[in-house]
Image (cartoon, rainbow, N blue to C red; front, side):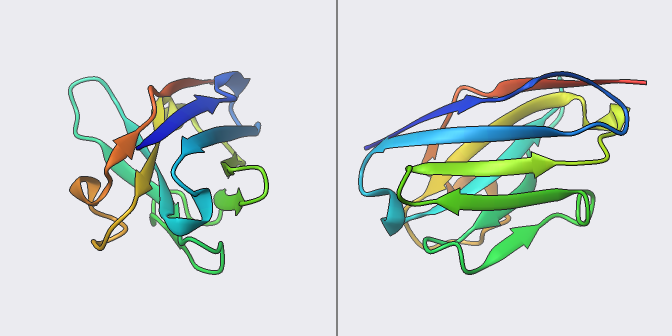
Length: 124
């Protein structure tokens, strides 16, 4: 079992930055990959970024590439999403997720455990 708790969401002006954090507990953190997804009301959950177990490989959606960066600190059992140059269209709920098995990093069903989500609002 893995428990995930996100934090760091909030209100920011367009062009600003936020850093989301996701603290994990339960299973050994360095044994699984982590991802960030986001979801707008009435829409499917969308892949944002993922990082492998060691932090040595990262994957980022084209829609946020160059603006968002995922990283992890295995000593702190935490994964981060640094979001820069935020746009109003980034206003959605962000979720972190753990992928304990095989499966494509970009694919939502590949992830076994999910956090409760944190709201990010970008004002224009």
